[in-house]
Amino acid sequence: MNMDKKKSLLLLATVALGTVAYNALKPVISRPDVVDPFDLDKYLGKWYEIARLDFRWETGLSQVSAEYSMNKNGTIRVNNQGYSEEKGRWKQSIGKAKLVNSPNEGALKVSFFGPFYSGYNVVKITSDYKYALIFGENLDYMWILGRDTVIPDKVRNEFLTYALQCGYKTGDLVWTKH
Image (cartoon, rainbow, N blue to C red; front, side):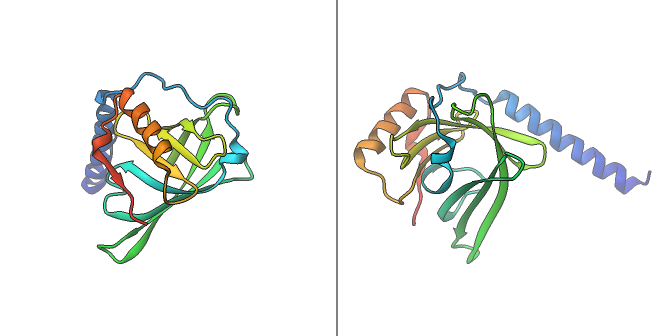
């Protein structure tokens, strides 16, 4: 094996180990209560991101949306996209999701990078499936989604109060421009 391949493998192993260590040391919320009963068919379709805790993939993006549809193999196709004003172009990421337990629970795992999955927990949803509060697997990931780009104050306040009670830093939320 030549030296370049050894260096590449060492770098890859270091990145993988660092990722595992980083995630292991993050504050993890105890398994959140998820929506139950959950209706996946009602959840599928297009959602607009109303707010998020910012992270590297989404930093600087506006007009962010996610569209969920069924794949033939029973997984859920996830199409996330947003507009980068700085770069003057759309950014898109296609992934897949799976239900974790029962199809009646809003606990999913999502992958955009091969075999690596992250928690995606629908913890609050309005009865008309118009607004949803999503928690990731730790306190760094949270989204407020809507079928519209604007959320009623009553729903917004309910979601923010719940997230705050669960330990999320709601003051750090980025309110998405549409």
